[in-house]
Length: 94
Image (cartoon, rainbow, N blue to C red):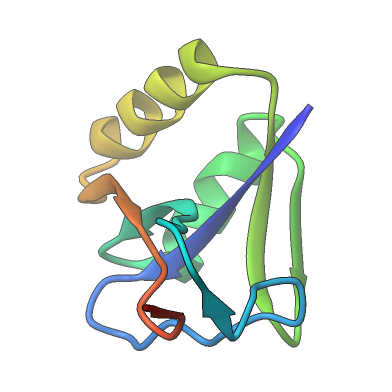
């Protein structure tokens, strides 16, 4: 099982405690960027996906890349724009 962070499009990404502050090589964190986060969470929960939300944000439990494609399709079917993206913007990569 993997974890896929979710954020709302246009909102800043917070650094997380488990992300490095400084990294000498490339560092990225795949996430799902959605147009309407609250609606997306509702759709995914109603479709049986496990979503955890806490002070750090929303995280979706996934079983693999094929499931990510199904999640994107489910959201787009409900007119929720979404895309996978690298969420790391707060890590210095020197």
